[in-house]
Image (cartoon, helix red, strand yellow):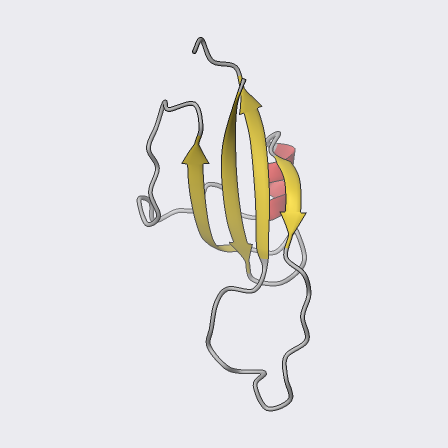
Amino acid sequence: MRQQVLILYLGTSALDSEVIGWSRYDGTGRSRPTMGDSDEPPFRTGLDALLAGWRLIQMSQLMPHQPGHEYDVSYLPYEFVFERLVETSR
């Protein structure tokens, strides 16, 4: 068994909100995905990833914005990490 990891950045803290960014990593060695290798996200929402069989293993901690910084541009705050285990002959 090998692990595949999918990191989805969502528009809000809700799992059913739209995917706005993503990264994929394939521990099977079958593919070498890179950031920006697709114009379309692998799933429309985080919930869609769950429905496709990906397991949610981490959600980003909700941190309140500091007063006066509510509209600062920075990192994508709503990160969700998914995994799935794939059988491989290795």
